[in-house]
Image 1 (cartoon, rainbow, N blue to C red):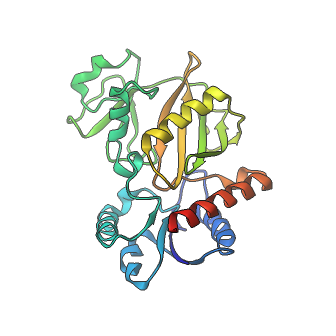
Image 2: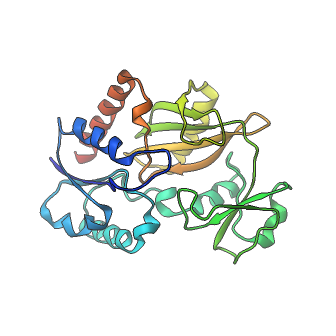
Image 3: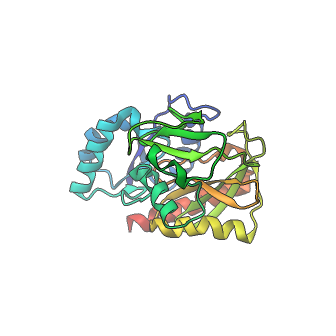
Length: 267
């Protein structure tokens, strides 16, 4: 089963080494699959070479190669090429509109608007987080007491003095592990986290909302001052997994789950 594995090994992610994670993952997946690695900008050109599927991993923010990604997506959909994660994701894969949709639907998410004229709909706070609606990886993020910008172009959220951030990692709909950042100022200095049943119910609600039958998803949340979890991001395109921080037995369980998921996906 030859797979085209899409990654940007040279992307300079803050606090993360994409290349190390993808070298580790591909070294383990080769036990079950034939793999060819390529940069995301080259994926479309390689599609005709007869791969059974494309697996998108640490490919970096799409905005850095938006035209190439949009073209790859269109060609893959037209040709019926299996892409893992499937291109039907409703969260980050489709942009940031889901934060607005989840806010409107009453999900436990950091309240989000995309029009400064609607600021009264948010809780009153000293500062607001403002970022481009098409942004990623905190690119363009600013904090201000007076958000502005054209309607529909920015996301505006109350700046929350949260206790910590925590991420829940899933393969298909199966929970794998959780990691958290005890220091809010050090997002990628992560430690193992033992979730409660309430924590898992929170995370699973977003996995269920996204309706992906297969794939890797990361539910990022923050612990609000009042104690509840609020969604920060639902990453369903290319979530970084921080596998290097896990004990060997957890890594092995994750690889087993991913391999099983890929076999099921490929039929």
